Image (tube, rainbow, N blue to C red):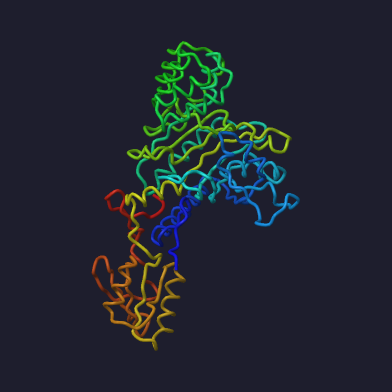
Length: 451
């Protein structure tokens, strides 16, 4: 029989890896809801015409959805799997506008699909975690700062390496390019957006191919090199380029406000951040894991003035949002063995089984513990105590429960500390430090989910 080959770009985690991923999802959901964001799940399928209209060569990455024997007259022709969560979100808002209260804050944790060439940190099927704020007619710039700050804080609570956020403003870039007499702004933005991957030496010929003069190319590359957390330093460097345009002033003012609202050492302006998608109009942001920048951004987003409104007419619906690439982060850390979950089971307690005649009593013990929120499992068959405890330890279960004849005659052993004591079934609770034990880049840590 031929060996089953894995599908490249469609990750499937080991149980301990999936356990951590599910903990992260629950943690982020809780974190977002604490800040007033409401949950949303949209359909996986959108009209191909809508997805293909959003620029940046996305049509090359779209997976078309079609039944094997479908004909052109069938209703499912022209459908495709969404490649991000922003476009489905905008479509949803356009359709449900009358049922929503603005400004609306939503979070969405869902799979997306892109027909990319699989490589480190890039997948064809992956989870994104998005937050967006969308308004009706207007949306205060303070939400740009709030979303960037939310992204900074959410990433800081995850068991991953530190992340730096690089912030820019598309108005500033557009003003610079228009001040240089450039008309094809989108093509220049897409070229500059590749700077992290190919560097100035790779971007320069792309700009020259667009017909730009050498002095314009030089100025664009000088602008792309500007990076600092101090808005005064950034503005001085931009002014030194000697280019003027009203959009430069507007973009600098907005960039300053966002930096001051979300300001921290790990949030700074970086004028090479352009974001390739056409719908961004103002603030843009990307997150890079410190020491692992070679995998590219692990979070990104920005301001879009009327993505939702443009889909259905009616009032303008400006929004701002960011996305965390959860699969990219975990896939890279898992693959490089930089993040290891030492608990394979979600259970905290293994109830040991003296004999099959005792199974009903052991199940009752487990049910009592579960009723207090303690994840519990009963050992699957009769075996020696040592074998049962070894199995629990291999699963990362901390406590082994020795059944007694009544509620107060039970014993429990802490398999980490090696200590055993009498316990009361009616009142016992696990230690508060019984958290998810992880190893992050060689360092041991216990992750409680929120801190």
